[in-house]
Image 1 (tube, helix red, strand yellow):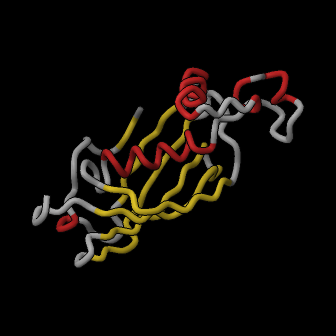
Image 2 (cartoon, rainbow, N blue to C red; image 1 turned 90 degrees about the vertical axis):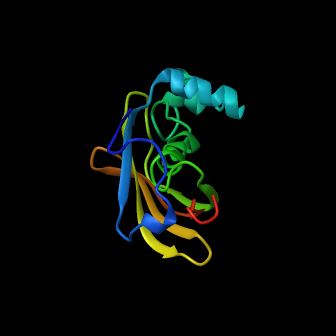
Length: 147
C-alpha cells in the first residue's frame, strides 16, 4: 500500500480546508476472499469467474464496500487519523473494481466545525482516470483539548 503521509493523528486544531491525504492499493483475489469471509457476502459476482462472466460486469468484481473501506483507512490512519470517529458516509458507486486493479483513495477536508469537532470530507476512489466511488464523510475529529 502506498500513501502520502505517515500514520498518526491530525487534531482538529491543525486541520485546514483543502487538506488531502490518499492511499493506493492493488486489490487482490485474497483481499476479495478475505472480505467475503469477514462480511459473509459470498455473492458469486465477487468469487466465481464462470458466474461473473455472464453478468453485466462480464467478470468478477470486488465488493463495493471493500473499495469504500479504503476511504475508511485514509480517514482512520491519516486524515484526521487515529482517534477519529465516523458519524456518516454517503457513497455513490460509479464503476466496478476488478481483481488486480490499483485503487487510489483520497479524502479532502471541505468543512470544519470546531465547536462540535465535526469535519466534512469529500471522498473518492479511482482506478486510473476512472472514478469508481465518490461521496462525503462526516467525522468527529480528535482534539488536543479533549483527548
